[in-house]
Amino acid sequence: MACLRCANRHLRPGGALILDLFHPNLEYLCDPKCFNEQEDCAGVTLSDGSVLRQTHRIAAQYRSRQMMDVEMIFYVTHPDGREKRLVHAFPFRYFFPYEVEHMLARCGFAVADVFGDFDRSPFADDSREMIFIAAKR
Image 1 (cartoon, one colour):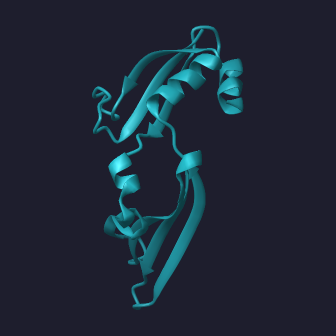
Image 2 (cartoon, helix red, strand yellow):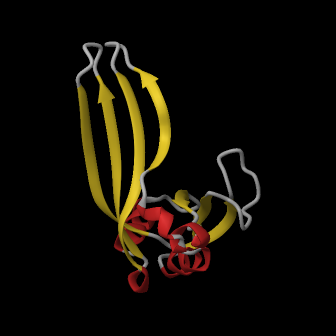
């Protein structure tokens, strides 16, 4: 809320805020498999010849607070065969659509539109993104 209020203060009258949030998939979040590593990127060759592979996993869930501990895991295979595993762990709070609309309204915004992806497709049950276009009131 403090962040949204601050953004509102910095906008000129008639200005807009574009807010991109991930749309929680409850089936995935309730499936015990979400605690297993899941591949995001199978392998990208970097300029130095190293290969980067990326996975993620949920390390812990706190459903009553809509929080989870997430790990982004990076595997780097160097040209000489050495391998390195790097883990970036962080807490993650997720929001549901009506929650976001409510917070935006409380912070001086009017929701002009909501998209389900960057191609401006309509927001739907199976959308991976929630892209809010909110105008300063």
